[in-house]
Image (cartoon, rainbow, N blue to C red):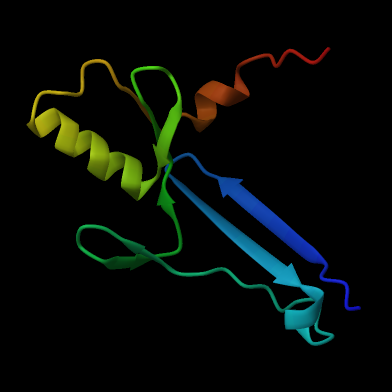
Length: 104
């Protein structure tokens, strides 16, 4: 039985977020072989190494989408004037760094 060992990183940046990962099986003995997929950003299909740092929550406060998908969905909601009960946050990283996290 082969063990699949995975290392992953998520970078939540001020304007853009991205991710990278590596597995023992895929690295073929090279620990520096790291995969960081290109992201195709809708609607222009521009190639980017990141997605916008923004998140959308539905009217009940539940997570709906992140990044390009969140921006696109919120824009559509605005166009049809159905955005008022939704929660859209853009470039929130610096706000998080100033908050104290409750840790019991």
